[in-house]
Length: 194
Length: 187
Image 1 (cartoon, one colour):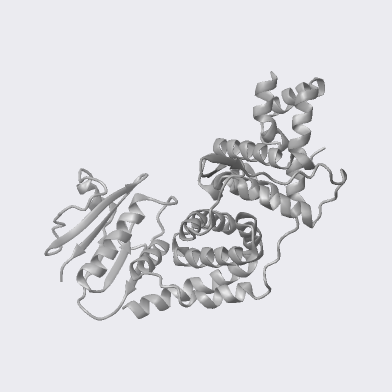
Image 2 (cartoon, rainbow over the protein chains, first blue to last red):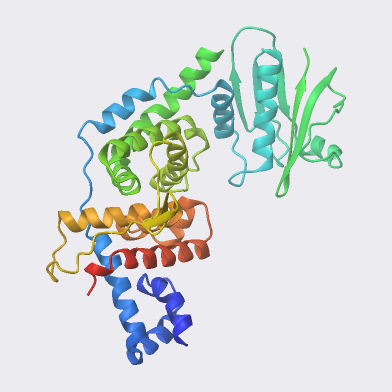
């Protein structure tokens, strides 16, 4: 390993964030190169000096003052709803198109109609309800359904995850829906008018 | 509806968030201080960061350390914070200042005449803080998280929302710049 390469890696070497082979190669180079050794020593000095800087102390009541201000934080209603739904819809994966699509549809319904939202989540098992949430309030009664996989597969050709007009057959009218896929599962969120 | 929704949301998150604030605020303040360089601004930055974190707490992925998530918000808030404070001009000490037709260059005071074995003191603390303040924001954050907070490259990449290769590059360049600024103190 030449000096140029070593000097490019010297910082990561000081942090032991290189592969074993690179660590050994640099160690070998440093043992025979005074210039790079000097470079490394100075890099270490900077690193160590930063590590020994005193921890700056906040005023003792800082946490209390922060918490007291939280009451005034306005979390927009659509975000509150989004987070609540996202938490209850136990979909696999971290951030899936499915959870986003379901939650967005719910938000659309909530604010588009001013009505209640009832959410069902079902998976490939075929049982219609694995988890459900209902947010009650005034206004009209609507329902948001995620159908069993057997029904969802019928809409596999529906563009994902764009909302699409579909007719489930077992309800009178579907005004809005979205289909999304996540791994081996598919989810359908649909808005059924009263 | 909105009241019931708010109550449900707050009930679920507020207690958890309060505990996290109490657990993390000291560390967050230290990072904020090293980013801003003074106590008043550090306190403002920490408060704004936690308030924003609370607003978006629902999007916080629980598999990520809360501190790292807060650092990411703080890093973004710092950009906004600088924009909101036009009276504070962040300038590299190497950047020439135009004065009329000529240019002058600022520099850190030469401490070479001082005691060679100067222990880490208030003075060195101030000089290091001043040197940190001259680093570009991303370099500064990476150096603070690595060398002051002791985060690994992987954790820094998570906190800064960048690749490990980028972390490595920012640290390398940040430390090199710091070394130049602090050369009078280095043996």
